[in-house]
Length: 347
Length: 287
Ligand SMILES: [Zn+2]
Ligand SMILES: [Zn+2]
Picture: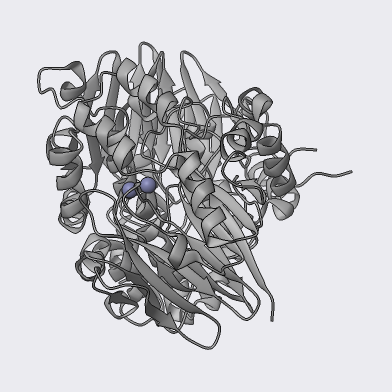
C-alpha cells in the first residue's frame, strides 16, 4: 500500500518508541569535500505550493564538523533543521540572500528559538551566556530583527527577567546588514569556516523598473573546500566570480512557465511579469554559470514555482532536459543534482 | 456541517532538542476546520508546514486564537499571516488573544516591510498593514465570548500561567464543543468552564522527568519553578476531565514530547483520575 507523508507521520508517532530511529532517515546530502550540504527546504517564491505541498521554504545547511551555517530561512526551515538532526546550538550563523518571504519567514523565530533553547541558567558567567548568532543579509536585515524584538518585547523580557535566559536576546542575536560590493569579500569567520559575500543584483532588473530585492550570494569555505550559494536573480558575471573554484554551486532557478502562471494567478500584470522574467535565472543559465565557474557539481535549488511533491517527477527531468539542451558537448557540463524534497516520500 | 479538529503541533515548551521531542513534533497548534474555514488555536514552531501537510493552506485561515504570547504558541504566526496575505486571501485574518495581541499585530507590518513592499509592487494587493485585524480582549473576566460568527462561538477563560496574560478557550460549532486549556498551572480550575464539553484538550507536563533534564542542564530555580507551577501534571488533567464530565481527554502541549515517554506511559499517569477516553496528541492526529 502506498504510504503518503501524512500516514507516515501518524505511524511514526504511533510507534513512538522507535520514532527517533525511524525518523532518522539520512537527508539527501551532497558531499562537497569536507563540507556537507543539506537542502532543508527547496521552495522559493512568495507562495507555499498549495495544500499538501511537502517542500518548505528555501533553506540550505552547510556543515563542517559540528558547525553549521544556514543559508535561507523560509517557512518550515526550523522544522526541517530539527528533522535533519541539527540542533540550533550548532548554528554558527544564519544568512539570507534577500529579504523575501522564502528567505525570511522563519528567520526571526530562528533567532528566538535558538536563543530559548536550553539556556535558562540565569548565570552571566556561564558558557551559555557567551552564545551568539550572527544573522547576515542585505540592507534591511537588521531592521527586520529589531522590529521583531520590539514586537516580542514583552515575551523577550519575560524570558530574560523571569525565566532567566542568558545572554539577553539582543546580545545573542546579532543581525548585520551586509553592504557588500560586487566583489566578493569575507564577512564572517568562525573557527575554520569562512563566509564571503558579494552583491548580485542584476543591473538589467534595476533598469527595468521592477522592484527587485537587494540580493547577495555567499561562498562558504572550509579548508580547501568551498560551496557557493547563488540566489535566483543573480548578475551572471558577478555570480561566476563569487563561485570560481568552488566544488559545488547551489543555484536558485526559476521554472519560467510555472512562475508566470503563479504570477498571473496573483494578479500581476503582463508588463510586471515580463519585467520580472528578465531577472530570473533559468536552469540553462545556471548550468552556464557553474561551467564558467569551474564547479564540479551544480545543484538546482530554491525552485521558484516548485511543485507539490506529487508533481515532482515531471519537474526534475524537465530541468535535466533544459540543462542538457544548453550543454550538449562533452566535458562542458558539471554534474547536476536537482533538489529533492526533504524528507523524501516514503514508499 | 461537520467540524474537524486536527492537532498540527503537539510539543510544549521552547526546548528544541531530541530530548524534548522537537525532532518529531511541531510546536503547539490545533486547527478547527468548519465548513472549509480554518480557525487556529495557537501557532507554534513548524505548525505552518503541518497545516499544509494536513491539506490546508494559510488562505483558508479565518482567525487565529492565541492563548498567550510565549513563543512556543506564536513562533509561526508571523509566517502564517504573511503567507495568507501573499496567497491573496480576502478578507483579512483576525487574531484574537490577550495582551499584547494588539501591539503585536500593530508591529507586524514593520517586521516584514521590505518583503511586503516588494510583493505589493508586483501584484495588485491590498496593503499588508490592513490585512491583519487584532481582536485583543481583556483578561480577568470569566468565560466571555471573544469570537462569534456563522460557524463558531469561542469563549475565553483567564488562567494562571505566570508572567504573561493567558487564557483557555472553549470552541463550539454545530457538532463539536471542545475546551483547550492553553498553558495553565494548578491554581486555575477549568472544570466549571469545561463542564458539558465533549472534549477537553489539556496541556501536560511530566514534571519529575522535566526537572531531571533541567537540573542536568543547570537551569535556574526560577525556570524550574515556572515548569512546576505554571504547567499541569497528568493527575490534574485527569481530575479536571472527570469533574467536567467530558467523554474525551486529549493530552497535548507535551513536556517532554520525546518518544521516550510513550502514549501508554502518559495514559497510565492519567488512568487513576479519569475513566473516559484518553488520547495522547501527536502531529496531524484528528480528535
Ligand atoms: Zn507553552
Ligand atoms: Zn506558556
